Length: 395
Ligand SMILES: Cc1cc2nc3c(=O)[nH]c(=O)nc-3n(C[C@H](O)[C@H](O)[C@H](O)COP(=O)(O)OP(=O)(O)OC[C@H]3O[C@@H](n4cnc5c(N)ncnc54)[C@H](O)[C@@H]3O)c2cc1C
Ligand code: SF4
Ligand code: SF4
Image (tube, rainbow, N blue to C red; front, side, top):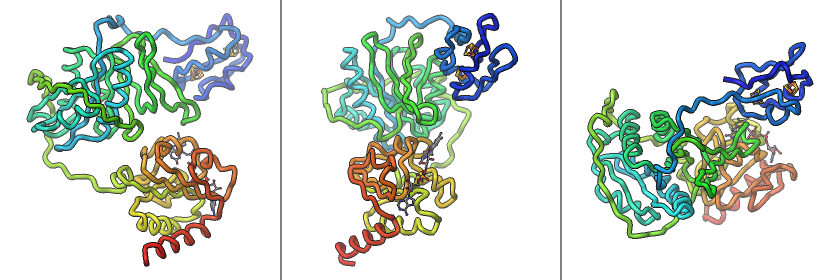
């Protein structure tokens, strides 16, 4: 599907060609032509003063009966015996939405041997925790997890379903949405609700250059994923209840058998868990200079991050990348060294408690988000900082 040009109205003025972010419009002799690169963003429609471009009607089929859906759900991720912290973070966001709608907030856990798991979630604002405790769910598989969650949603009809944009969430939540015939907005950075109950799902778009607020007016539930550490958990115990639920066995079938689970302990895991991150960018000039940041990170018991600039230069492994196409992090201290602070980097670290930027360019955008700015040559500042830390630590 692509934008449609009305040949009777188009004057071939060319204005739409300039605004199309996908470069999908070219001017033929008498009218604009749209290629298959069109993403249906609608920017050309608003720009054409002759009303010559329109978007095709999206075939959504019959609209869901919106009044049948009620309640806010959070999928609380459980993996190999451990709850992911994104569940409690999303309960904080879900609580605000549920309060505005005057409805219940429920957490849903899928897994096996879930004793004590519901009790861990109740302090974060849930009115109830739905536990699906089945041997088929002991290890994650797309089919069994999506089958179980879809079945619960069909039975209970929540109007909103939130999940973490983790490896697991990214894998099976789109299947749940597709199976329910509803929409899904991935990687939201902000969630709110309109007076009419529309979930306002805000996320970066067009390479992070604009923030888009997306709504799902005709289908339910309204589904969104949020990356870990974007929302903050809130302790808000409400004496909620824990309800075991039993989906029919046919929903739990999977063609995949998990033979062994090997826990991940690579740089990615260290990065998202670290309390201190020292990140480097193109200002480091070459791969060897990352050794300086590693030394500094070690002294502060932290991890090393990187901008995409540094990753693209091949100076550091992509698993260290912070930002829109890398990891989202929110440590206590984020030290940004020789990186400019492009919006795509900032969206991945702006939740850090304290941001310290070291850059020799006083106009570098990183200073706009920094709590403390050090205008200096990193090759002078970082070695001096390391010497000082060593002195203080008695080394
Ligand atoms: C769709 C898309 C997704 C993207 N995703 C990401 C992402 O996830 N993460 C990400 O980081 N980027 C991402 N980018 C790229 C981003 O736009 C920037 O290009 C990138 O972050 C720039 O990297 P940098 O800051 O290291 O390099 P530069 O922009 O080149 O900045 C280098 C900085 O180092 C400073 N400097 C140089 N020498 C010194 C010195 N001796 N001492 C002190 N300072 C010095 C300079 O003043 C400059 O500010 C994405 C881009 C797109 C289009
Ligand atoms: S802006 Fe409108 S009139 Fe001008 S080329 Fe595009 S479609 Fe045609
Ligand atoms: S809808 Fe967006 S992507 Fe498609 S032609 Fe118009 S401006 Fe380009």
